[in-house]
Length: 202
Length: 238
Ligand SMILES: Nc1ncnc2c1ncn2[C@@H]1O[C@H](COP(=O)(O)OP(=O)(O)OP(=O)(O)O)[C@@H](O)[C@H]1O
Ligand SMILES: [Mg+2]
Image (cartoon, rainbow over all chains, first blue to last red; front, side, top):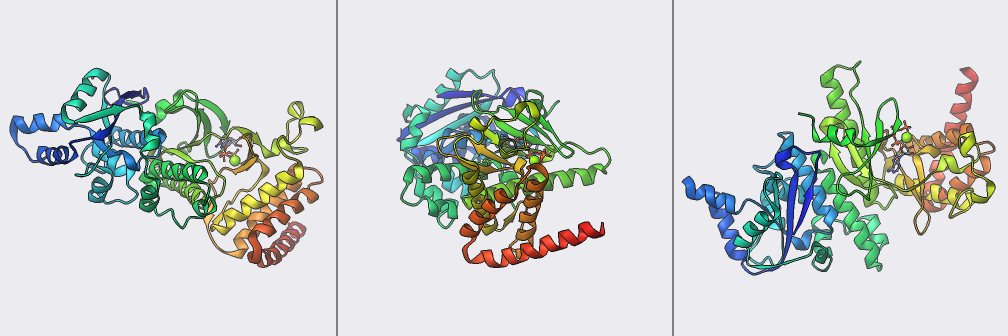
């Protein structure tokens, strides 16, 4: 797990704990738990919502650390400005990662599905939540292994990213045909730039 | 409570102050990789509501043009953060030299480059070629820059020389031959007023532009002649 701190944000939003789980063995159960938590009443509901109080992101669609950091930055900024387009900062991260405005589609593509095998798990909080505690809370609901974030480069599915962003016909990508290293650099740059500017996308 | 963006700016290094915007070197995710932050500050002489919506649309316009260029393979900085409410656009920091300073007449006296290290990585002619090609790619993508000068181009100091276009604050979307011709004419005037004996340099720019534009060149070339003529008439009258 890694912890990013941004001193420019309000204290209660200044820390992001990020872990990459690969593989994940309980995606189906995790997904139904997340869905159920939203509808439970009373103390039990509160507890369940707290237990799944993370952004769960399908790691195959994330092209780099900066890609994820950019989505986190824009989501936290929206939260701090009272300008969330979704209910919570964690769902906002998932929404920002998807190129369209459709939240259901964002969760279906970028969130947990029954077949998810690798997950980036993000917790936005203040400095009072120690990293070990955040990690323990993640481990309590996910059965799998955590690996260093740099392992992302073996997990990214570039063709799926290309499809979601409709990059296939873009001149930049067509010109890089046959040079897969160059193509990845370009896809990563376009995707990061799209995430950064999602708030003003028409 | 101060906003995240005002904290960001407070911790950043001011590198240029224009009439419309202040430009900073700042850090968001990393202490080693900087970003460039352009802040379109509040204009006291404008009505606050109008000011806010104008600022917002300028930031949005610049970001959209950059994204369109990226998708079209035009060398421009990537986008790193946008806070349109506060008038802030964060983009990739390009490490390199402003083209104006690389050419005769462009550098301030004390920083004038000696012949030996003038135009690193590439010669003047090759540099002009890179400029023409990049502008053509941008025009073919339907983007008009609106403020083409040698200040708004950076020769990146990476492995292979890369010419990066910056400052899309006045850019717009257009496929019109007239708009492309005026874009080129603005650059021609900028060359003439900044760099002595610029004609051969600008012709090298046009030569590379022509190659990249292919069949689209003829109409732009003809229109550029018209625009030049209009410019001369205007200066005779005015
Ligand atoms: N991405 C970048 N990386 C590094 N330096 C940059 C970048 N963008 C701009 N600069 C530097 O900052 C200066 C001002 O940027 P820019 O032209 O975008 O702003 P501006 O407000 O329009 O300024 P001006 O009115 O002087 O044209 C540029 O001339 C250049 O030297
Ligand atoms: Mg400028």
